[in-house]
Length: 360
DNA sequence: ATAATTTGACCAAG
DNA sequence: CTTGGTCAAATTAT
Image (cartoon, rainbow, N blue to C red; front, top):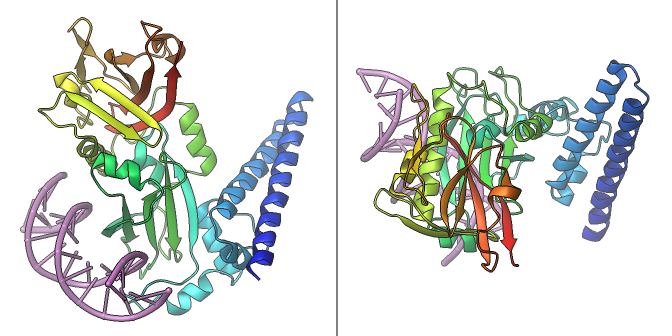
């Protein structure tokens, strides 16, 4: 029984993969032939939707996939809209709505929507911002995570956070979501939606494509979220959690930590804390001390990449990009290097991206 | 003062 | 007995 369900799930994935590939090929052909912009846009949009659907299917258990994709023509425009559409198809939230008012501490066994968001240059909070107003009402330590080892190294436990719609009382909006770091990808977050919103969205939803777009624009000027102090606060909190996790505090200057397979060892300048938790200062001024010259370096602006290596901590500019600036001064040294990317202007941070091994 | 988040307790499902 | 989901008091931020 489970085998046949699993096969169907796999078939669903493969069929959608083939469709995504076909769309991508068509799009490439359109671009080569200088076809009308509108048709290219349309193809690009279809491709994006197909990929979003793939991500969604991949995130579902086999039974959920069967349940939710009984109507395979339903292509989600975005995670939340998809939830709404399935609801209108009577396949997702009719079930939920029939019992959503039965609020209790009972474990939820109702249908849910799971998506995965990657942290882009906009930071964690921006990546998790789906345009709705959520209120956190609890969190739990996650047990049995694949990353529990890294988590223990960090000295804290991975948590799942529980959010409910802020319009719960005013508009009887019983949508909830859970957020936790992905087991597969430490840079990604799993977001599980329960129920649909009866309230209105605050902002356009950042689609998976736009999230990728944010990633692509990593080195471009950012003109967003200036007035969203709550997002900035969330970013700051997440950063503080991270700092606590790796043992960074105002008095510590040495750090060695591991995130998954990524290891970093560094002598931290005392002013490392100046790199962070300073969002939205009027002049966005952030300084770090160069390990080689002891000069104060202005790393204001966003995003800033700092290279942790045994040589110390150095800011990277877009001019001196990874391949150049991470070349170890002494080629005989084995270096585990990671990048800590800090969006100092907004207090965003993300730990990225590579396990750059130099063995020469 | 008010709003938002954190945290431990509680209850039910597995 | 363990774990998931929620509540509500306490704490923290604005």
